[in-house]
Every structure is written in structure tokens, then in C-alpha cells.
Image 1 (cartoon, one colour):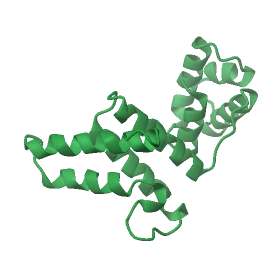
Image 2 (image 1 turned 90 degrees about the horizontal axis):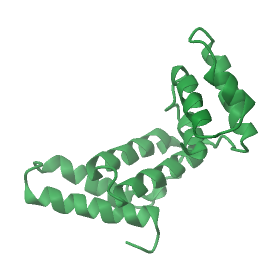
Image 3 (image 1 turned 90 degrees about the vertical axis):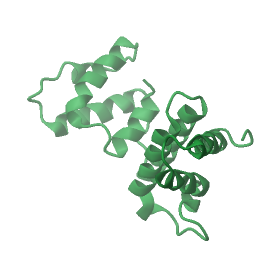
Length: 163
């Protein structure tokens, strides 16, 4: 598990406090050394959500991982998801949906777009492609073409200059 991605998900509320002890256990198995993570892994279900969050944040700090702000977290997750789509480990339509959901989660923090929706989050083309899928049946040959365009756009987002 990537601690920076976990911190980003945590910031955006994508890690329920009930899941934190299990995540901590997985981190210990992977070799993460942190007293707070170890305490969190051993915490009981009856521990309060606030205590679990406090231990998780302390563990991140012990591992020199800063809990990012919401916008920084969304950008990090956007790039991660785009990499997964570009490397074909995540379905293009599902990946685009997840990126669009991230955009929606931080929309109010972004500067206004000059021309196109999604422009200020660098997903204007991806947003258009994603919504194009709504108009086409999955068995239509154009659906595959749009998915290919989504993969290329995700490649651009993940690795600028390679699309």
C-alpha cells in the first residue's frame, strides 16, 4: 500500500475509520514500522472513530507522510487512477467515472474554468469523453473507440508528453 495515496484517500473521506485497523494490519505486514500504526492494528472495534483517526494520522506522521489538503489529495488520486487506466489495470469507463467523482468532490475548491467544464482540474477532455459514453450502448463499436480515447487521455494526465 502506498502511504501517500492512503493519506490522500483519508483526506477525502474515502477511508472509513472502521477500516483503519485492517489497513494498519496490512501496512505492518508490508513492513511499515510505526508504533501508532501498530497500536491502530491492535485496536478494538469499540475504540472510538476519533481515536482510530488520531492513531492513523500519528502513524502517517511517524512515517514522514504529510496528510495533504483536499485539492492536493484529489490531484494525487486523479494521477493514480489515470495511471491505472493507462496501464489497463482499471477499466476505462470505471476509471473515468472515479476521476469525474474526484472532480465533483473538490469542484468548489477549484478556480472557475475559462472555457470548458473540468478545465481547472485538467480533465476537460476526459469529462467530455466520459459523458459521451452515456449516449452509446456498450455493444456499439463507437463505445470501444471512446474507451480508447479515455485510455489515451489518461495516459496524458498520468504521464504528460506521452499521449
